Length: 121
Picture (spheres, rainbow, N blue to C red):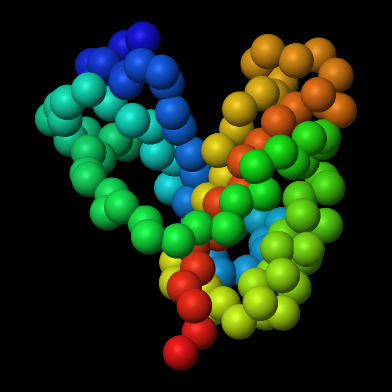
């Protein structure tokens, strides 16, 4: 698939990074990322960059259902992180596997929530 002149990697992989550090209803600072085969020329709307590999990530791999239930998934994840001696080392990411584009029933939407963590020292 080609988007804005860039050829997307196969299999396609995209995710969002939320930079606010807290839940917000509006004015959200979000970075939309998609894997590409090679960099193209940056534009005003699209910037190409390499994101460093992440050593440890907590993934709630199968958040199945509507997006309004995300707060419950995040609450569970943050409690697990605290209870198991980890700390946050980056902004949360969400990778949308199934959604409105391919599933009519929002209960069938599938999202991977990724939270970058490290063992507390």
